[in-house]
Length: 508
Image (tube, rainbow, N blue to C red):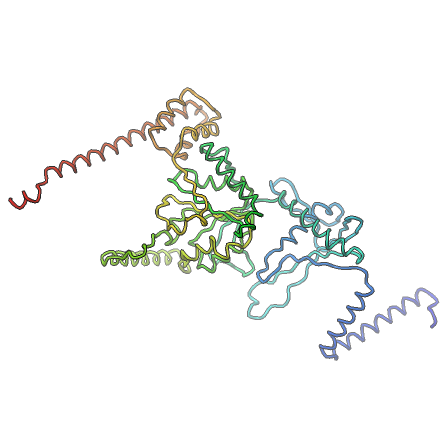
């Protein structure tokens, strides 16, 4: 074989060889059967992999039929943003948890190097076009698929697969928790989803400032709730050992204005959980309810506020052997018909696409059925003003594990509000307020409204005077109501005394 004499002849020879090879490959692709092409590709890949010393691992952004975002991908993204972004030349910037710091991460097709226990690896963020879709599904927009490509020499296979990937997973998870921006989610009606790929939840940043320290609640009750929450958050192994899903139900009940929504925010802030505010009236049926549950993440709270007002889930079921009378049945039928006509009228005026068909059975399965085990570390919270209206099956232990009554404001709760709103812990008016609060029922919301300064001239003394005035007015109203009730009772007793007996009526 004669070697080329000059570099120009060498490049000419290489170019000619490559051109001939490409021509032959084009002929093969055009005239060879598909099976033979696949066989040649397989053989080529095997020969190449035999001589090529590097191994590649892909971590895709989405996995599964539902295109759920991979936790592994998110952990890799967080790990690389913290450990390798300094060496990258092309970066992308995002806002961090407190909306002030900026988080930098590698941009698409950027390549960075990392080292671990002497093993050198390379990361590349790549994207590919989505595969062609059937004509019947071309209505939905196609999305590109992104993935991280990890490359390393085959002599480091054991180090990378058994140690390095676990290291990346652990470090990335810790970084995500540190930079995590908590969110408040709400669900939308199914007919408003523009694409099957779009999530069923929309969200905003959760920025509610409530904490247990600022709640108008007795110290003993606060400590009890906090200990219960912290014990739950650290009990993953315990729940696995007893064979239960890692979730816990809380029922918050009490009169309006007693702080049920504030309690939810305080619980979320204590545990750093996301909040999913579930609107049952926007859920089409039980199947859609299960889909919403699947879309929620761990470390979250699923909240249904005022559940006694959500759909027809509050009716007490008849005990075994108890029957309806004909009059009761007729009244119930008439009431049901009127309710149907009213709902149909409201749907027509609001342009709704159909009433919700979520049933009590579907909601019970949502709380503690098989589907409730999806994910982990989750709280389910119900609130109601009238706990007696709820079906016992809905709030029994095992579904709503802890019942928390939020009642009227006590003097201890008032002192917390006084410190929050006025910045004082004691005052000469406190004694009078304590006496009045022992005689009058007032909600924390009403106390807070009276303590709220309305102008720059409102000093603590004036705000406390406003509260005393409100308590005295409430005391007078209570006395008037009790007096009217006593008078009605006395009148009824007098009428019963004057009314003739049965023998006297017969004689007359």
